[in-house]
Amino acid sequence: MRILVTNDDGIHAPGMAVLEDIANAMSDDVWICAPSEEQSGAGHSLTLNRPVRLHKHGEKRYAVSGTPTDSVMMALRTVMDSPPDLILSGINRGANLADDITYSGTVSAAIEGALAGIRSIALSQVYAREGMADDVPFDAAREWAPKVIAPLLDAPNTPRTLININFPPLKASQIKGIRVTRQGFHDYSRGSVVEGRDPRGYKYYWFGLHAIEHTLDHGTDLEAIDEGYISVTPLQLDLTHHEALPALTERFET
Image (cartoon, rainbow, N blue to C red; front, top):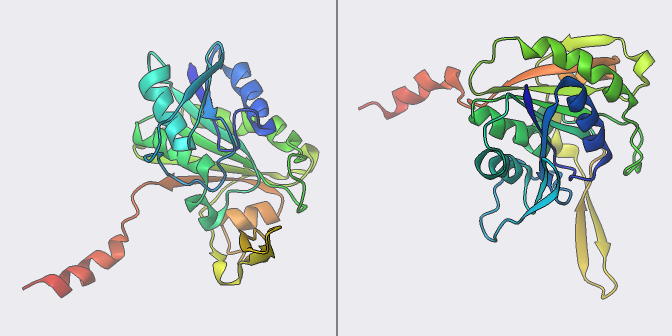
């Protein structure tokens, strides 16, 4: 089995090293192609206004001066001589739950793989404390990821779908199990924008990642993580609101 490993935290991120170890235990044909630098929040964006550089860091190991989507595209179209059987994206430093997945470079790298018809899985390690930076413990993801990935490998791979996995902020021994979940939803009306001033007195702003309310609806990824379970969420790329089609069509009929 040929595996492509990518992420949005950058090729040197601790979570990348964890996922690379997991991939190497599954296969002897593992390729790395990831952003040169952190691209968190890049979403499914492409680099269109400047050239993308490709840097080789070793055998089957490449970095791209662009987004996670750039990295997957470069891997499939330039780096690899044949496509992978599996794309693993992560392990992200922090959660990719609920509607945060629309911002996520980790999930978007898996989306690009799904668009190419390749089985794709995004993996993220939730952490509990703010300000941990690179000090996020990946023990839960390291121990549980192989157990979660294994049943997915021979499952039907529906076209234009992917799997989003999140590990709760617990020790591996404290995790209660695995739940298949649906996407939850946050209340972004209470998100924060933090204002500051630079040394020259000009204002700048940081988008805060705290104080976002969410409802732990039954069966969601948010509920699973809150209750100590790993969430496994199947996602689809069709964003059409099918229930609205008949009523909307009526408005334009002549």
